[in-house]
Image (cartoon, rainbow, N blue to C red):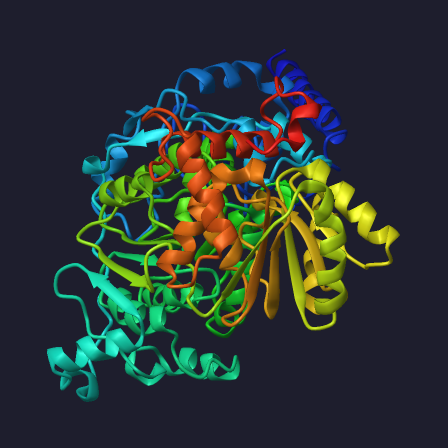
Length: 631
């Protein structure tokens, strides 16, 4: 009888296993990419265990161990576990990692959470929409994202984690630089049009060989034909290589990417290799998927020659593939904030973690704050170790970003290229006072003269205007492209590729969609619709090449925007046109009361935020008739 009971039990176990396999079979195609990486042969976390995922070669699946990520995704079969996960989330710590000491001590306390939840700190779908510039995602993997188990991002108590020390300072000042007197340093910085703030700021260097980089990195720099450091690189590289936190302020095209990438590579190569369960060492955050892709492509040659792995993580792309790449382990992750939080929250935090991040980059911080990502940025920063090295880069430094930097960076050096938030004096600014009904004919004249000379960027203030202008130009036989938030990912990538390769030289775009674009040889910017504030104007005009030009159309009805254009002319030491000055003077006369101050951020910031929200499709209460109105 006992033998019969054992046979029945064995048959029942086998039947249960077959039933589970049959139940999961229908989902295998959807998560095949995930199972290839994390599936059979790897266990995941149970709800009462904080052990990291561990590779196994002799797993007995009849022993009742935890299900794999593939089963986690099948939420219908784990309703009870899902309920528990919604109530409680434990921080996972990799006990194999050499970067955590006192492992035995930590292991005893792992049944207690290391932290508390951040109310509302989980990832929200609207954040992903912002990163995707409002596009409707059609990728099947984004449906998968909705099905996978997600928990809230926990608040980590770093005082309970004993992190292993790491090295930050790799810079040795060469004799040519150390011999420079303070007067010579001052003159050299003035030549570079640099301003620095902070204590004990390293002296700027003059050549790549003076920066303390390894020979293989230097050779790669030469292969990529970077002849000499740009101003921000000349000052930023020795600063960051010295282990200092840094704030870099410069316009698009100033060379900020190499400024943070080269020290990061040196930083990573000095540390112990990753082991199973480790997250990245270097983390780069950027506001849009285009900028994430651009950074990833820009550093691809470096991490290949150094034997490092870099994974781009952003919305609107293959979610399962990104999970697979992260599970393999990567020293560098380039991400948008909300998709990174998705990865940290998926499957109870089993995909990756930030415990080994010792080098953090916040690129285009001003744009991310403007787009509403500050809470996500702060959550990610809180999940990284406090003694990490942080580099924050931006084109402007509004008060919100200053506060973020003050709270996140330690004794930083601020490096500013040129005047803060000022149009390059070498860019020719032109303004034409024209009513709406005269602009198109004038645009045709300009394109007829400039289309064959180089690339042209035309800015409008709404998606509808973008489509309408595209149709009108095509009717007049002008080959052009358009780019705005609602474009699907394939169209966006194709458009950017055609512009960069010279297949088409004219792009019509909105301010939001153009963020992160770095167009080489851009000869002309046309503000078909007047920019709604000073910062947007500077950003648009600053996209031209060093000696490019920008033309702005403005009407008498837009006179309230003339003030910030006048300000841009004056700060860049260019002569203000008489017509523009007259418009600005009329705006001052017609302005009543102290509440509408153009030099203050208040109302204009609110309007800009409203326009940004509308661009992403968040303001359902705004009718389509209102979308062409310039606020």
